[in-house]
Length: 55
Image (cartoon, rainbow, N blue to C red; front, top):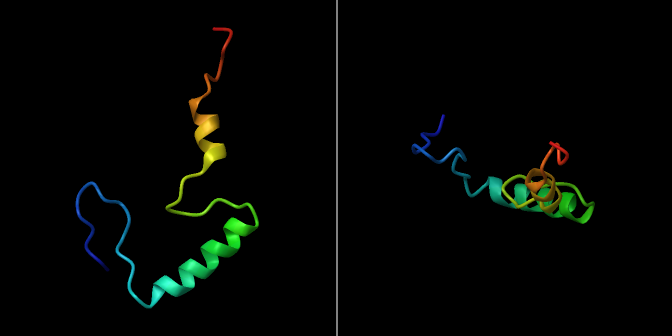
């Protein structure tokens, strides 16, 4: 199991994993799905809103 530095919760990717991840991430992004390690604009908008604006 790889050692992860404190404050960094993403494990290092090996060179063999990169092409597979990149292809999958490109396919998900093209389909409009959220992609790990990339900003999600819809989530950011939802998280900024006040959940109960009348209170």
